[in-house]
Image (tube, rainbow, N blue to C red):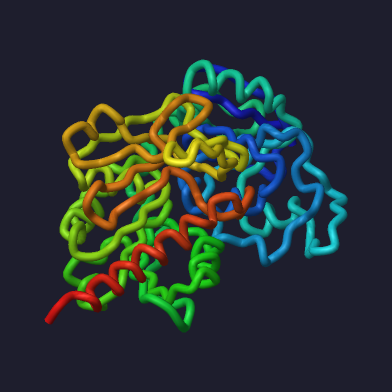
Length: 362
């Protein structure tokens, strides 16, 4: 069946629908060459129509080990060539069947390079996937659909659960965390309690954790005021490490500000410079907002990492408190594992703090 991807600026792109469907979401693009299943199950894409810039998608199939959440939260998937005959020793099925079984709207045979150029020029915007020949009145109505603002509440865990058995106890505030982040933390030596996003500071402190982790997640950080307030109340009471949305929420809780990027950072190949060492890391990213560096003046904060491509803030650290964050995902799902050291750094901060407390004179 023929279909169209239509953007809010009037741009239209023809393709084939995997099945008859209609979808509405924020149209964005991802520059990763691999990791399409991780993209589809990354909760940070909640409410979005994702265009993959790499032309061949589905060539290594799908497998359960690549799943990053209990379900997919994407609104739609846009690809150039959809491979129906994958080859990979881990393959458990085709991406085509995966999309159909999970009712994920997909349009393929699309000029994804043209889509990406429009989004880079005009910015991320509302988009719809519809069958060819749909009445213009219905298209207009779909384009007027309000996009959700409660995406964090859609993707967070509905109940508390645990991972890891030994090591410092970390309270993980789940704003849309990927499974591989939790697995990486458990492998680094943490015992984890994963909490719903709306957990209060009092409830977190009642667990007597050794530290607090603020996860990745979707949407505008300013639309999660309850999380900002919780973090504000935890600052100074426990060591805190935030990533992605958690990084933005931490900056807001510390008195900083955030703003919407023109087209965001989404992919597994984004270079970030560590300003302390001068080393450049290749990172996995998925966000549409950034921390305003000017808003950090006078907040006792240091910018620790910066995006090589556009100079935006990619990491901050408090000068006197055990509090730090990065804008990217420090694990490889998908992407390189260059930044796994950040989990070890968090572990060192917690152990160093414990040792310092134990060595205090009576």
